Amino acid sequence: MRQSSGRWMRVVLWIAAAYNLLWGGWVILFPESAFRWAAMPAPNYPELWQGIGMIVGVYGVSYALAARNPLVHWPVVAAGLLGKILGPIGFLYGVHTGRFPWIAGVTILTNDVIWWAPFALILHRAYREHIGAGRLASPQVQRMAMRAKTNLGPSILELSQLSPILLVFLRHTGCTFCREALADLAEQRRRIEASGTRLVLVHMSPEERAREFFRRYGLEDAPRVSDPGRALYRAFGLGRGGALRLLGPKVWLRGFQAGILNRHGIGRVAGDVFQMPGVFLVYHGAVLRSYRHHTAADRPDYLALAAAPVLPGALQG
Image 1 (tube, rainbow, N blue to C red):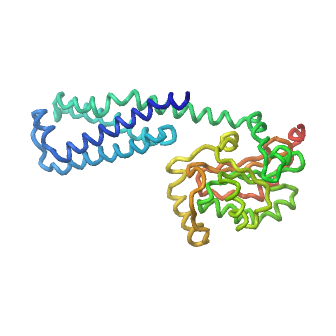
Image 2: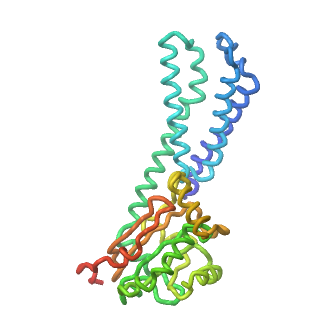
Image 3: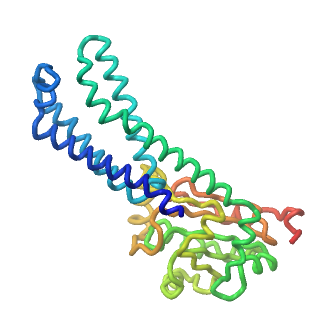
């Protein structure tokens, strides 16, 4: 039902992509035709008008890519809507100053105005999805999700009844920051466990492949949960990242440090590349402390998280 209800968003973006590519191609190939139609003088530098056509065409490519998952790629829609609002404002100013005739506004209607409502609806839907994801991160939902069994047999909830656990949600195993996190955890594991806290890992790979991967870091004996469907991630409010959270300047700089200088490298993708990680200290099924990554490059202080004080209310099962 949800899939069919979101189909209209993909259709809108595919139509927008086709329109932008056609309009941009027309402007590039025939830069003077629009001016002749509007009875306006041809531009002295048609290359500038062709450049605008190129920009519109690039937006078409962006819309086509965003159509694969509009709710995840909502920043593309937001950027498009902003341009479609600012464009008419500029046109009205040009009409007011006498530089544009009203007839030129036909292009504004087809390029901008008709897209306001569908693009705004997509953004509204993305906002509602974001709010809904936040509601998933409730104690009741988390406690139910903790019934997931680890590779050793006991569930997360059962392990948390025995001692505090540091529940670490990882990015996909090909990510250099996932590899850096495992190296940090392997180095700090003895001190984490000395504080009375046990380490539990959540990943998105098939268990058969994960076993060898974690062995490289000396963590093959750590309890872990394979969650390729990311149900646990969602239950703990860990969403999918956008462009800045995954590819921002900080991420590139840290990626160079972790991947090249510290030799963690990268590998084959196994899991959702957009999935964000996080860390939670859990005791008796209650989350005592949490860290949700702001960017993929964040490097949590695992020792500080593991040393969080046990609150009296958390002792109630």
